[in-house]
Each structure stands twice: as C-alpha cells, then as structure tokens.
Image (cartoon, rainbow, N blue to C red; front, top):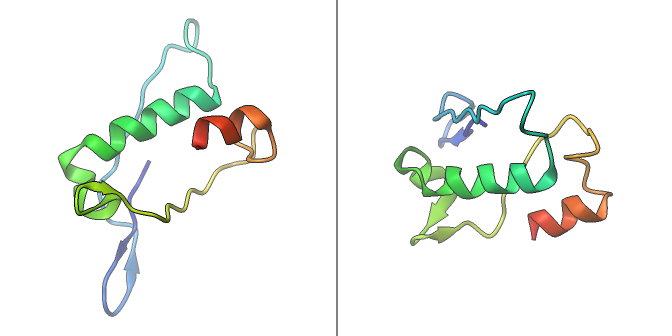
Length: 83
C-alpha cells in the first residue's frame, strides 16, 4: 500500500508505504485480509496525514486494485469487507 500526496502544484506517490507480509502456505488472500490490512494502515502514524481527518478515516478513500476475485468490488464478500 502506498499513499499519494496531493500538494498545491502536483500529485505525488512519494508518500508512506506499507507492506503486509503473509505466508503463501498458511495465509490466503481474501477481502477480509485486505480489510484488516487497511485497518492496520490507518492506525499507523506514518499514514495519519493521508488517511485521517480530525482523527477519523477520511470520507473518501480511493483504492486501485488488480481486479482479482479477492479485491474485485463486484463480489459480495469484497463489498462486505469494505463497508
């Protein structure tokens, strides 16, 4: 996960980066795993500026995903995990 910083003159992707590491043998990729990653990310001080407004998650969050079934928003489990 990476944060895009929006400055007055430009948009930059040089913000903080968060990498969630899982065991390929024991942990499976799922919408719930990504939701847990996001919950962890918004609690990190490095992401406070880009993820929070007055201590709560900003009302609009834009995520870019590759469209796999564990990330694709047309699947009910993904929608449930995101809301």
